[in-house]
Length: 138
Image (cartoon, rainbow, N blue to C red; front, side, top):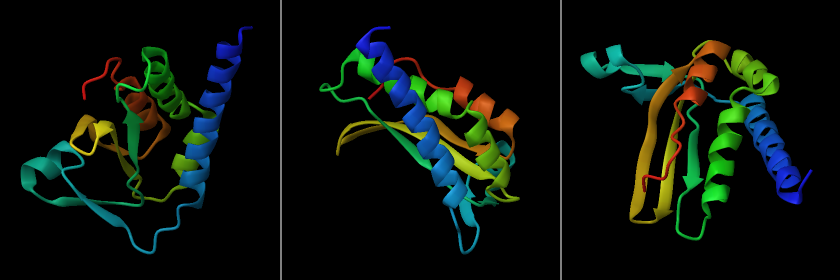
């Protein structure tokens, strides 16, 4: 196994564990409100209440190689497939979470790569992971 493969595996595991930890310890005094989390909320203008609103940020700047960018994307996608993260999502609260993915390069270049997505089940998490972009857009 090459050192990049070991490093990549370590990074994937670290991201999965970090997400599981964040979701597990997220103690929210009141549910957050996200306008436009799902289609009915966008159409009606109503807000949808959720327990947690993580924004996942991926560095897409020129200082990040294509391999490093891919590692970030695959790490986050894999984290949403990890059983520990799926368990943390189930335990995060009855309202679920609204999650989005942003690619950024600097303070003037940010791109919403995956719009706010309501995640209330492991199936939702797997669907969110499937939406991850495979190319830089910012």
